[in-house]
Image 1 (cartoon, rainbow, N blue to C red):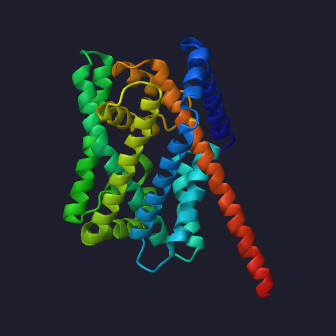
Image 2: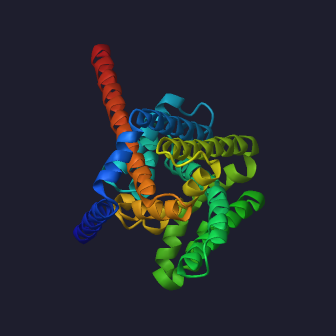
Length: 331
C-alpha cells in the first residue's frame, strides 16, 4: 500500500512538472492571457459542467428502482463521488466504489448499489465511445501514416470492441464479466477466479437484467448520457469561441471525443496530470489551432472541476449540518 501511494505521488509530481514545462515552453504570458480572456465566461463553463452533474445524477437515479431513493439523495451521492475524484486525484477507481458505498449506507442492498453505479458508468462510457469513435475516425483521416495514426487506430479498435461487447450483452442478456473471470483462472488461480466470479455474479445479473429487460429505463438513461456528451461538446465550444479559435462545432466535438481515452490509458497517473494537458495541446494542433489553446482549455476544465467539487463539498457539509440539527431537535 505504501509503495502504491509513493508511486502515485511520484507520478503526480511528474505530471504537475510536465504541465509546468508545457506552460513554460508555450509561454507563460500567452497562457495567462488566454486564461484572462476566458474571464467571466468561466462561470458559464462551470454552470454547464454543473448541469452535467445534475444529468448524470438523474441517470443514476433512473437506474435505481423507482422509489428506492429520492433524487436529491442521489445527487448528493453524485456530488460526493465527483468531489472524491477531483480533490483526491484518485480517478474512477475510488470515486465509483465510493458512490456504491454511499448508496449502501442509504439502505440500498450491496449488490443493487454497486450494480447501479456500474450500470450508469457503463452507459456513460458507451455514450463516450460513440462520440470517441466519430472523433478518432476523423482524426485518423487527418493524420499521415505513422506512430500517432497507429496509436489512435489501436484506441479506436478497443473502443469499438467495448461498444460491440456492450451491445451484445444488451441484446442477448448474456454477461461477459463472470465468464472472463473464470477464464482467467490460468493467470490468477482457479480458486481465486471462482471466488471473485461468485462475488461478482449477483452484481452482473442485475446489470444484465437492466440492460436486457429494462428497455424503457435503458432508453431514458442513454438519452441522459447523450445529453451529457452534448453538454461537454458545448463546454469545449464555449471555451474555443471565447479564445477566438472559431465557432466550429466539428472542432469542439472532435476535441471532446479525442480526449475520451485519456482517463483509461493514463489511469495510473493521478488526475491524469500532464497527460491530459499534452493530449489537449496535441489535439488542438491537429485541428489547426494553437497548442496553447488546447492547454488553456485543459486548465479551464480542471479549474471548473475544482470549483464544482468545492461547491459539492459545501453543499454536503450544510446538508449534514442541517440533518444533525434536525436529529438533535427530534431527540
